[in-house]
Image 1 (cartoon, rainbow, N blue to C red):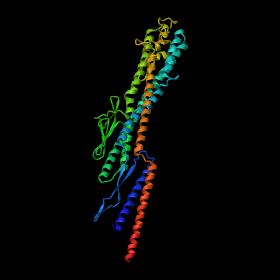
Image 2 (image 1 turned 60 degrees about the vertical axis):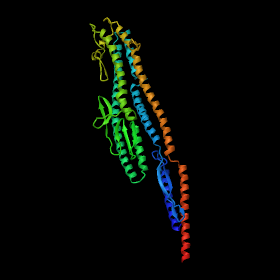
Image 3 (image 1 turned 90 degrees about the vertical axis):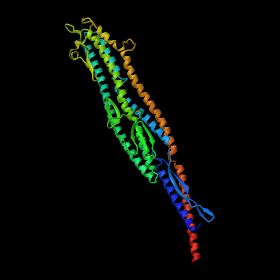
Amino acid sequence: MSISSVFDISTKSLMSYQEALDVTSNNISNAANPDYSRQQVVLSEDPSQQVGNFIFGTGVKLGDIQRVTDNLTNSQIWTNNAKYSNNNQSSSVLNQIQQLFAEPSTSGLSSLSTAFFNAWQQLSVTPNSNALRNNVIQTAQSLSAQVQNINDGFNSVKSDLVSQSKNQVNQINTDLQQIQSLNVQIYQSQSSGQQPNDLLDQRDKAITDLSNLTNINVSYDSGNSAVISIGGIFAVDRAHSTQLQLSNINGKLSLTTTDGSVSGALTGGSLFALTNMYNNTIPGYQNSLDSYVNNLMNGVNSQTIAGYTNGNPPQTGVPFFSGYQNGTLSINTQIIQDPSKIAASSDGTSGNGNIALNISNILNQQNSSGVSLNDNYNQLISQVGSDTQNVTNSAKSYQLVLNQLQNQKASISGVNTDEETSNVIQYQKCYDASAKIISIASQMLDTIINMVA
């Protein structure tokens, strides 16, 4: 084996360990980057060379720079991201809903309803009192105002849900376009023999962002391109990226293709939380509130229509409420203008307050099922609170699962600075040793030249 071979082997060794140090340096610099996957140097032996009857090694080469990752862990993270985001977003919306009801407080519908029926009870004792009649009107106006506030709040929240949903669909489209672009770049890099580790990290980050927004299914084709579907809708591969839109179909929000021909079956992610709140949860609460208000109005009106006003002569058939439409509980304008129009008497005599007394009992009067009007409202408030607590607890549970998965990913793909520092020392010593061999070979060559000279 000649001195030139020693130079060749040592030079390749210098280059290999220099590249290994570059990779290690890149690992250390990205140690705090949660989206970075550790890269691992694979050193391999150069093909041996036969000289006479002997076989000599020809040194080392950088065989590969492997990206250390676990696709199974990534897949589990994406699945749990969708579940966590759904519950976390739902919790945020439901907390807004709870604030609309303002329960328990003096401004809540429960307290205002109680005050309204208490005013009727007081009127039943002194049905000729104008002050008490005005008190009935005032408490009814407060009750009506809170009903309006809650319904306006529902509409405001739903409007915000539509706006947020549109923004998230736009973000989904942006993520899909980025993933397609990365698919192309990764394919081109691999086709030219390169290892696009940084591009693979970027694609995983884009898929992770997408999984926060919606439930996804991810697979990989023969060219290592990510193929993704969203709720049954084909979303992206290397050749195509589907543009999606938020559609309102029969009053329901839905994720569809731009032509509206295909709808996605959303089951997770923050977009599902927003659309589910709009389509199902809030309308359910609105129906319960409407039922409560309608039953209250009809209960009061059925009594006042059968009763008599305090006029001369007394009138009958005068409803207290004129209607409940579009979230507004309206009081009969005749009564607002003239409190004597309130029908508190059952027989038309001025001192009779039986109708007022009957009305005062409506709130707690049980129906054939043993449920009162007050029970119905309390069930609604209880349902809102229970729903909020359930999704909040679920969000916390999925957060714990995600933390465990992230720790598992970090143990596999994360950078251990102590380990990398050890590699630096090892590669540096190998580099120094290779340089030393070159120096010795140079001295040997000088000796030979001097001998010949």
